[in-house]
Each structure stands twice: as structure tokens, then as C-alpha cells.
Amino acid sequence: MKALKERLPAYTGFAAVLSGAGLPIYIYAPKYYADTYGVSLTALGALLFGLRLFDFAQDPVLGWISERLTNAKKLIITLTAIILALSMIGLFAVIPPIAPIWWFGLTVTGLFTAFSFLSINFYAQGVSKAGPDPKGHVRLAAWRESGALMGVCIAAVIPTALIGVVADPFAAFAYGFAAVTLIATIFMWPEWKERVSQEPSQVREIISDGTARKLLILALVNATPLAVSSTLFLFYVESKLGAAGWEGPLLVLFFLAAAISSPIWSALARRYGEKPVLITAMILAVASFGYTLTLSPGDVIPFAVICVLSGATIGADLTLLPAMFAKRMTVISPNGGQGFGLWNLVNKFTLAFAAVALLPLLERSGFVAGSTDLPAQAITTLTMLYALVPSLLKLLAIGLLIATKLED
Image (cartoon, one colour):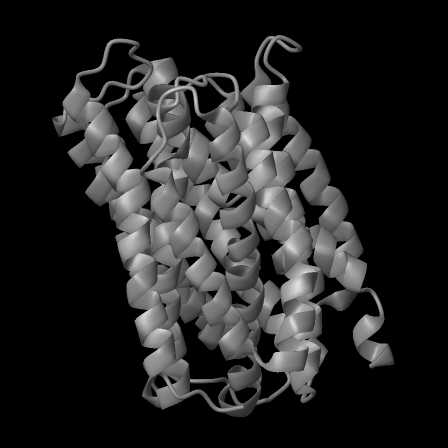
């Protein structure tokens, strides 16, 4: 227990950096390039999906590399963190020297390749940090995911909070992110240890394990609603609610609720078990998404309440599911690299699916980013995609979880 508690704040800080490079970029980057450089939403969606197809090959390979790092592990991870910081600067702070769509693809590739490698090593390190104690994984997840969610909060609000304060808010965010990344990397340096088992894991061993396979499928279905709502969030607030300027505060409410709820879900899971607690949170998510269908333009306060409730349910998803998967990895893949390579792939694929499936549908309905005169069909399509699709997917995830018999 004592060993687990040592240096846990380093995990919180590093998780905050990784989360700031993840979901907020999916929220802001497509709209930023559409508004600033006039890049087509369909083109952006297709490119993001293509990059995620690349991840099908990349993430397992990165997991394979992760499990074979030895003496140079700390140096390689530090260099990767530098690539992460430079890619963020290139994405938002550099005027594209080539066609914007290709510059977007190049910088996002660097950003998410670095993000993937760091995430795989970070979560794999958590497997050995928590050790054989089943409750240790939930406890570490609470520290880690609370930091991740706080990082999302900060990354979500900074670009909009800086509007009117600095000439280029997104450039300022990118440079600030780079500085924080280097600081978090320094604090995390002592935690990177060599692999637990001298025998690297094999992907086929993880996939052939029934419990691990069920958890990966559950993660795929359960993460898709968040990917859908994240992809469409800015468009929904601006065009459906008519609340331009409220995007930042509403995102903060959402992720702050997730961060505050994370240790609460962790404590409940340690007492009542992960599965019943997670099912409860998922039911609350369906109720909050469903209520979104009833909103009208100007309903900012009711939507803020929905952000708090749905955000709280995300705290359960992001804390309990990785902890459950990590516990299984201690049994079948102690090094964790290959397992979290697959886990990372599954979660990123949901964001790609949301981009390639939803953005073209939205554009074909007549939706134009930033337009103040949208046809009724475009608003209806936006509402159905934002509220109804996540509700249906979450119901499917609940059914899968109920039908899955998980080992303790």
C-alpha cells in the first residue's frame, strides 16, 4: 500500500498532459481547420478515419516495442514527449507551409503517434505499479484518471478563455501545452521501470483470453457515445443551442464533473464491485443523453445540468473500465504493453468512427460550420446524431456488460 502511494501525483500530472493531447484535439482541431482554413468537414472526417486505420497497425507495434524497452526506456519516452509537444505547436501555432489538409494530417500523425506510445507505456507502468493488489488498480486509476480529467478540463477551456486576451489563442495554448509536457515528463522520469516479466507478451494470448476480449469489446461499444458527443459538441452548442461563447464553460462543467466523480466511483467500486457501479453510471448516462433531445435554442442552463450529469458518468467509464482491464493484465500480460496497445487502439478507433460516419452525414444535411442560417434538416440531423445515437449505443453497452460474466 505504501509503495503504491509513493509518487502517485506524478501519475496525475502525466495523465493530465496526455488527456490534453487527446480528446480536446478531436473537439477543437477539425472545427479550427474548417473555420480558419476552410477545410471540408468531409475531408477532415475521411482523413481522421484514415489515420485511425493506420493505428490498427501502429498501436500493436508500439505495444510490442514498449515491452522490449530496457536501458534506454527513459530516454526514448522523453524524446517521444518532445515529439508530442512539437506536434501540438505545429498543429495550432504554425501557419501550414503546405495544403492545410495535409499539414493537419502530418501534425496530427505526429501528435497521436507520440500520444499512443506514451499512453501505452504509461498504462503498462500502472500495471506493475499497482501490483497484485486488486484494489490497488482501482486506487491508482482514481489518481490517474482524476488527473486525466482535470487535464481535459484545462485543455478544453484554455483556447476559448484566451479569446480576446491574446492574438492567437490556439497558438498560446500549444506553447503552454509544450511547456507543461516537459515539466510533467521530468516528474514522471523516476517511475519508468524495466518490464516486470522478461518474457514479452503476445497479442494472440491477450485476444484469446475470454475476459480480456470481452472487456475490449465492451470498451469499444461503451467509448463510442463519448466519441460521438465529443466530435459534435462544439457544433451542437453553437448551432442548436445558439450559445456561441459558452463552449468552453460547458466543456469545463462536463469534464470537471467527470474529474470530481472519479474518486467517488472508485470508492463505490471498492465497496460494491466494479460491475454494478458501472451499470448504474451507464443508466444515468442514457437518461442524460435522452433528455438532450428535448432541448430548444437558448436552453443553456438545462444543457449545463446535462453536462454535469453526463460528465459524472464518464468519470465511471474512464476509471473503472481501465482498472478492470489492468487487473486482468496482471494475470495474463504482466508487462502490460501489448494489452494497452490494443486498449489504446480500441478507444481511438471510436473517435475515428465518429469522425468518418458523422461529419459527412452532417455536411450532406446542409450543415455549414459557423453558419447562422442553417436549414431545419441540418439542425434536426445534428440533434439526432448528438443525442439519439449515443443513447442507443450506451443501451447496447449496458446489455453487453450485463451479459458478460467477469472474473473478480
